[in-house]
Length: 143
Image (cartoon, rainbow, N blue to C red; front, side, top):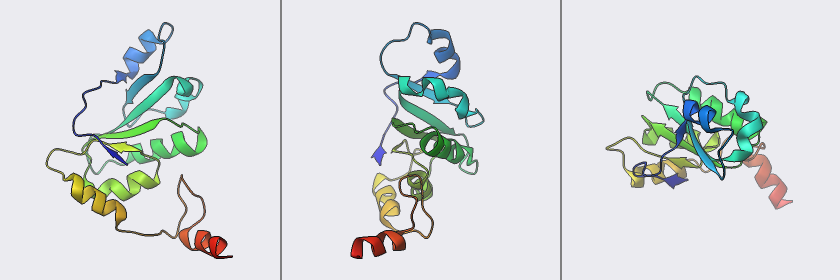
């Protein structure tokens, strides 16, 4: 997981992307609201190097679902960045749903975030990176 201290490189809003879509060249970073249907981006995903998904409140988890759809169903391979009210406690689920970068909320510690990512060595459910649970991966490796 990559940690971003502050957003120095800007991403286009959905409205900016729609206005520039026909003339845009090169990789584009896009920021979308957490209520947007990401499946509407399917035809353009190859044009995005990064998609930033919004967490306007830490209790609003719709961006987790967007990330899962982008990774598992739409096979987006670029950077998925969580921005907004992102807390250290959210890191394990962010990683499991496909986020590769995070901009932590002010006051959150990167050291604590790294510790949170390492806290659980395995999970009973698969995730977007590996569909098998940890104990089945371990059994196959041992065989």
